[in-house]
Length: 226
Image (cartoon, rainbow, N blue to C red; front, side, top):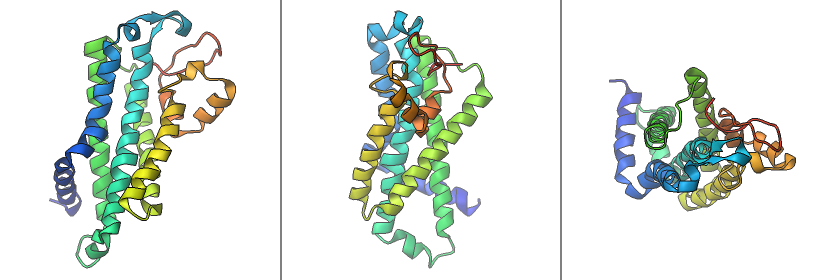
């Protein structure tokens, strides 16, 4: 087995030992989706959104939030912790290069993020009757691009943070504006032009536009399955 796959398997096993981290980066988003879907008003057609149900609107937002949690609460803290404890420095004395460690973490993060996304898509479809993406290849490509963008931000936070605690704090400061402009608290269909412009320039704001809903006020397209 190549060193990359062996190290990926080892890092995945270590990752699942941290139950609190596993809950927040993998389980929190699906649970939030279920909670939102159980609210009756979320399953009703919304006239202000052209008859689109809110649960359909929020599915891509919650999916994008899940990737953000993995990047800014998992990946960034892990690499900051490894650097803080000298793990990466000690690895230089072994045949395993630090680049292999980076590749293993990104591979693990990508596989687990895709798995979580598929779970949420399945929950949305089978539990709340949200349609599957109609353009699956484009959806998967956009998801991977979004994941890579967020992983890059997470790695940047890890590189700048002097410790794992500071990485957690910086990650939180970055996370909340990102999910705001993705439409978690204020749907993009309700944003004014200034907020929409800012949202378009953020990774999550761009990512959720893969799903389109024609809002009645702005006349632009947003955030449902397309």
